[in-house]
Image 1 (spheres, rainbow, N blue to C red):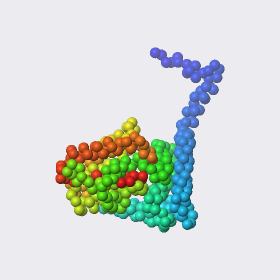
Image 2 (cartoon, rainbow, N blue to C red):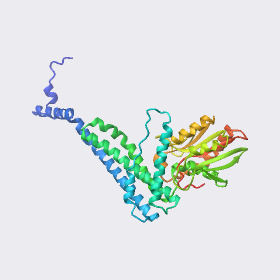
Image 3 (cartoon, rainbow, N blue to C red):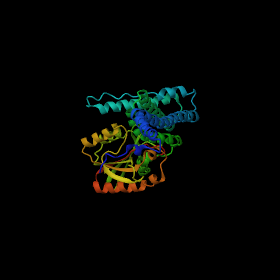
Image 4 (cartoon, rainbow, N blue to C red):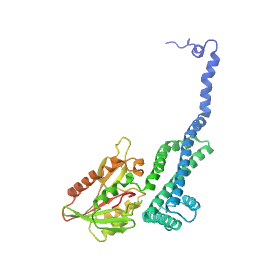
Length: 372
């Protein structure tokens, strides 16, 4: 094929306006070469601004809901607004982890110090409030604090990218924003459930164990953590959950350590909610091995350390759900799985232990609205 006679003018011409059509093709290319990143930055900025506005609205709504709830239920002598606003900006500095030896003990100390201070702060603000209302207010305060922190972080990253006019810097924020917004929206919707004291999806573990200990003798084994004792086919069964119906996850790590100081445990079974993957059905049940417990890892470290030291196998049963389902009002599908989970617990005991042995069953999760 001979390209020497190819007429480029004919390719770009449109009647007698060949040069004009050439400009129509070339000018956009030049613009995108030199200003493409700025254009992309402006488009992406518009999307992120919408997310930041929503976060700001969620933050304000959570704060207002908390203050309104305190005023209605606790009847404080003075207006709590200023003290609540001050507390929302409190922060926790994690310990140095350059030398990892003993870092988990340091983290646990820092986290629990913050928790204890929060409770004392609320008690000093509302000295006549009940323990149940105290746990609700504490959780609502944590939700408001988390939403405020999310807004600050996202806004900081966005303004930094805008200040430097740097499109690649804003890309990670654009990719992470849907996940941040999903969590923020879930926390916003969780406020109503905690105010009303209703069970949430994360409470399926305590619900299962709570039903198993309704007719047995119970005692407080560690901070906001209840222990019951029963029997099943010749096995001694310890039942452990956070104290309900207040909003608490208890301290199962301390409880298990206290139990092992007095008794020999042959197996531990933990029941907890677990985040499902996209495509998985909600309320599906899975069995596995290892300590099924969330959080920053301090409780799991305690449990794993105690189990390893005493050579105790840890079995787990999890109920899959989305992050929204985990912290909002428990759905019927999740609640209806409680009996199936209980059946699987008994099957697991039969398969992995012998008569005369002792099993510890731990219901992990927030026990709001779930008694024992």
